[in-house]
Length: 171
Image 1 (tube, rainbow, N blue to C red):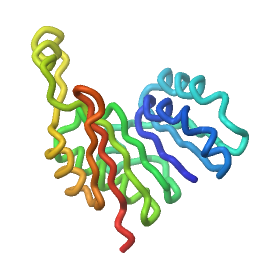
Image 2 (cartoon, one colour):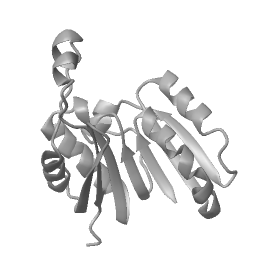
Image 3 (cartoon, rainbow, N blue to C red):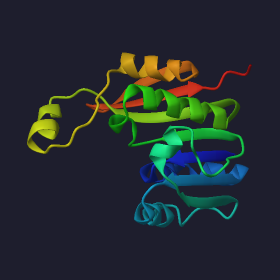
C-alpha cells in the first residue's frame, strides 16, 4: 500500500489507519512546503507498525500543483490532499488533481478535503483578512471530474467540511 499525502495535516489524518495498514505493509509519503509542519507528522505517526515506512519530503506545494514536482513518485494507491483546496484557484486545483491522477496506480483513489460555504465566511474574509475559496459539493464534484477522476463521491463532513473521493479510471 502506497499513500501520498500533500499537506502536513493529511499525514496526521492517517494515524487511525496505521494498524490496518500495518497488516498490509507499505509506505506513507508526506509532502509539505514547511519543514516544521513535517515534524508534526513525524510525531503523529511515530507509533506506526514497523511494516509501514514514512518518508517526509519538503517540496514547494505550489510547484507541485503546477506539475513541477522535483521528486518522482512510484504509482500510489491513495493520494490525500488536505488543507490546500481552499487556497487554490480553479485552474490550479484542476491541475493538482490531474497531477494526483498521474501519480495513482490504475484504480487508485484521490481523497480531498475542502471547506464548504458556511455562515462564518464573512468573519474569516473581512474581519480576519483570511481569504479562502469555499466551494459547494456540486462545484467540488465538477472540479474533481475536470481533473480526470471518475466514480466521484462528495460527502459533507460536519457543518462546513467536504470530503471528495474519486478513482483513477482503469483505462
